[in-house]
Image (tube, rainbow, N blue to C red; front, side):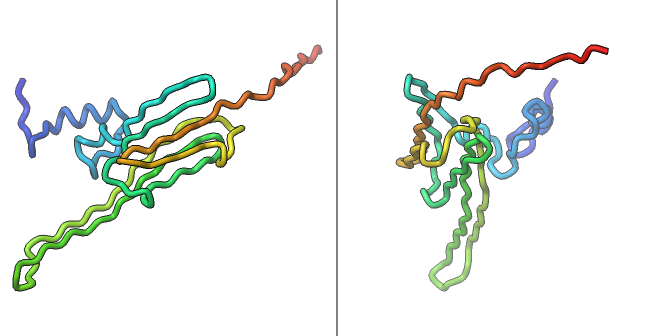
Length: 146
């Protein structure tokens, strides 16, 4: 069955796809939302290396936060573009504001200084070391006898 298309996208397919994906924040980025913050993760004996695609952002628009064992990477952009003709009349003005965010559980034993971050050519590279967890003895639990 053929469904009508509105602005080049099938609204019914998008609606049902959103139900499957938990309503990802696509309003700002449209169909490109699924391409944001693509991440490659590599593991070796020392730790993990992440490469996160963040094209179009500047270093000062990125924020990394470590809280309760979760590393959260946020990127926020606010832009205004204005074009005027030779007489100074505005012929076009655009505004854009948006943010993306992604979190990874890295363990509660890591500290901020353990994680190395570098941003270059639209790619955020992170080095996250492996920390050995303290070995805990199994906790004994007793059942009360009545």
